[in-house]
Length: 200
Image (tube, rainbow, N blue to C red):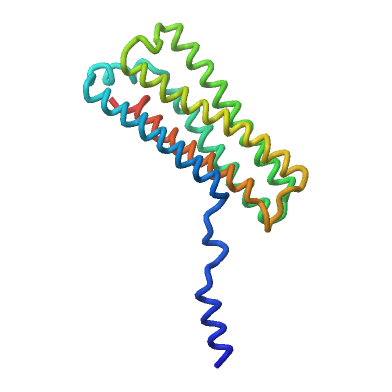
């Protein structure tokens, strides 16, 4: 009878797999990030409602190729960081570090593409003063870039800690926190891309 009760109690105990990844601090940061972007998206839709012509003419003038490449970089970065977390859970520290190097490559690819995209924009007379659409475009993309740079600093920190053996299968909260932040930043871009480059 006691064994049955113990088994029942064990089945009701919360599983460690059901916990929220990362830590409370990073989720406060993610909530702040999502709130910031929600406000910017609200500005986007308000501006579009009042200036539909500018938002109809704006997207075709942007480099859709640059937007698509940045989307690939962001999605790839999310995949790589997920693989890094999976590797550390299997106690494969070097494998995890290699996946993190992959994330660094996608960040570099994203920022380099953005540099050439902005340069191309200026050469074609597209600045923040060209129209309300491009003002919104620059606000959204520059804000997202700031979060990418913050992510790059976080990546440097977790890569060093991964290489020095600070993380283990039982304790890798910092790596999970970075992964959660990166996925949130990726999600923001997956909303920005169609709003600015696709929708008319």
